Image 1 (cartoon, rainbow, N blue to C red):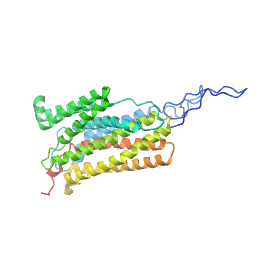
Image 2: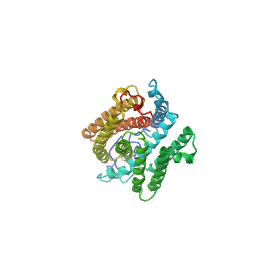
Image 3: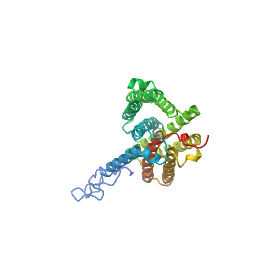
Length: 355
């Protein structure tokens, strides 16, 4: 993945020696795939389709989990069926991913700027597209809410959930405008508004909704920074593959921040679980089953994160740590989908035998 700078093709040769032939450097950090010029292709030729195919497979898997997951976890629980649960999960997955991408890009300069000897190149911003996609997802939830409630769009705006979704959509559009401006950091304000509105929307229950919303604000912010920050770091490391020292330093800075984000996620997640999930329905409610799946995925993420940190500290070449971090990112993508399912399934208190 990472390699040092290529030898200078213009270096002088000794008397009577043939001039060195400049071989183009690889563009993906891998050994030159074309083999010897004019000869047969090298052993890695033909692998250019691997990454797109894996991305397509991951996208299809995430879509299937989002569409079928709510029904599967609710099977046999006796809970009421949520109309359009699969579509709502897809839309909320897009919304959460948009928040992660945009917040990750806002975090990135704080990680990149202090790295010594870093290349002056930067990855292309996805913030505008991400926020617009999130706004479209929020608008889609408004349309779905109007359809299942048999209300007009204007009437839907007057409901609690419809009004909050409208605030989320407008906040993300404003964040996209800020991202396209000369001061993209201004997007922090509308994104904070979006997170607050989503936290309130996720807690319509009668029991301590303010406390639940506060926990969600911290949890959603930490999760977005972790997921989006890691993606931006991985993209930057790929761009810096010719500067392994700088790439390793960047991953190290992210890893130190990720420890605190993990602590925030663990603390708020535990408090939310103790508050919302009665112990007698952990295995018999859709919420409890989904939470168990999320905990299993987070265990895998934790193992991969620790392994990547160890390889980063042990090896001067960050390529092995980069591979492990890519796997961590892939599992985090599934965590986002499962988290969206958690916001769709019924409140487990309805089937609990506890008063």
